[in-house]
Length: 389
Image 1 (cartoon, helix red, strand yellow):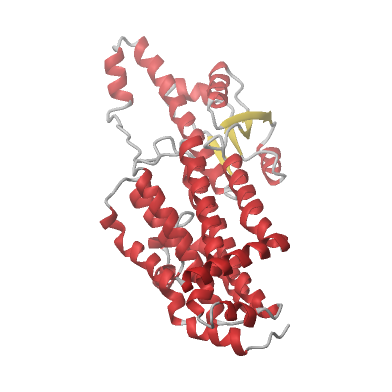
Image 2 (image 1 turned 180 degrees about the vertical axis):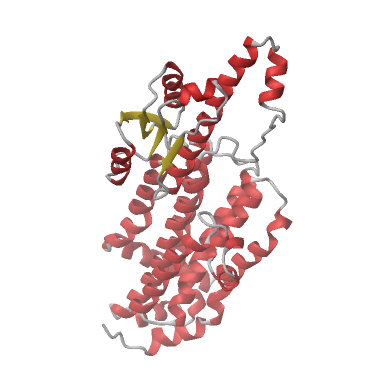
């Protein structure tokens, strides 16, 4: 009972620190919510739409104009300019006025009608990979459809039936099934790792900061005295308000993206709650471990910042971990965000059994327990260290 009373009193003390230090309010509420709204609003359309492209049409026939109209009708492409030459269109790409352009040389229609296999060209910039990949798809599709439309008209004039024409133009029909993210929604794909990554970044930093400031402001002995110099009780009381705030933020995030924005979550509410709990406790464990490893406010926060920033690359959402070099694949296991992402991807997004992600669940539990390795060092720092700016 005495330990519980001490935890309660230390938690009240921590709440008073929250009120007197605005850093906690901004880093635990304002900035994470801003990041949540920013990333989900940035990609609210799901995919980039109406990306600007140019046209170099030297043929200028009804067939070439129909190809251009069909290209402009695609959701992700918008024809914004016509250029008299390839060099001017290329200069427009270099100025970032357009992402791509379609080149239709003179005589294309005549060659099509005469079955002489004309060549049309399309150029696209891969400086922005998402824009380049999507516009490549549109340009390749329109090039294929352009030749198919002429072939269809020719075969119809020769008396072929629609079934025969369809079989000739597309001998193999593709039955496409996109698993989980069936609409190819980049918001549901990227925000579900970027926003938790930002939240974990702030958890890392604030956990190390809250313990480190006890040394910085010379309050560490007072804090430890409230727990009778028992570091477990002292840390439990200090981190209890943090944990409640972070869990509330994680659940609000989950309600917003899965309930309001309707991101796919066939795994159900239970898995969403589990991933939120794992995320918060693992991040707090790592932040506390970083401070215990280097009992210095500056060094511990630097380590947390570095680890959080690298997490976005090592999570595997932008570039698959299995495609990285072997040393980097091994290094990826040291980042909590990687394991959170794999549990989310396996159990929430794909509704696979938790047993399929048990290695990653075990790793997150391991991050929760990391402070046990350095808890005596933290106690020693609080009782004997003198803060050096």
